[in-house]
Length: 305
View (cartoon, rainbow, N blue to C red):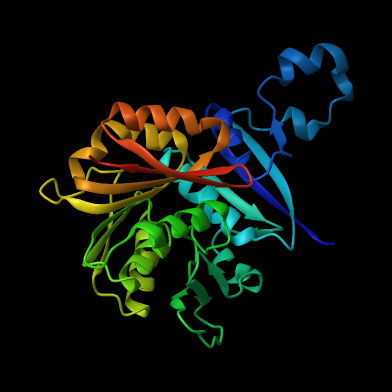
């Protein structure tokens, strides 16, 4: 079996945050941190220390994990990009010597048509697919944006979207990534979907996917969480597939954008943080009405009563 090394370069000050986010993808992390060489290594090993380590930049660190080719490396890389961007972390990602700029095309060999939820099907732009009875199909080229349908958080979110959306709903998608959830909302009959992301690359990709799927009722824009959302709009269904810390930060403000009886689908939550997110949303005036899990990931659905 072949393995791919996903390596992130970051500032030393961001190392704790980077390792926390990367551990959501894989727990076997390799960390290269030379900030304490003089303090901890020099007194013990002295001249035995390699010159490359002595000359390494103390202001940067590297964190890696290794994934087998059978895993969806594209979604892992896109997940990291979006989470780092949302947290304001400066980073560089390399995979098997393939740099960030080349990754858009290199990952495609890992991506195949897949069914998520009961009837939702994600098909790569370049693949042939014959829809089955009842299939709701979108065609995707996620590029550098998170959301191919293979990650547990995307599947959990899509299943809840399929369960709670009603024709004519006004939909808000916070942290849209590739636009996958908004596109499904459009195909399932929403009046419109407003899709936002802090990453301009993701917004561009989502817009291109909306155009390719002929869903003019999906609009995409850059926003730091809810900052660019029209305060006059009230949504029937909101989705936020982000991470626990960001969901908690959004909790006091999201209810103002929800209509009476609206549902909020929250995902990107590791099991250990679910109670924190639940407490924050309930403090913000929402009520937990549904939940599900896959692997170590959780989706929570709240209602605005």
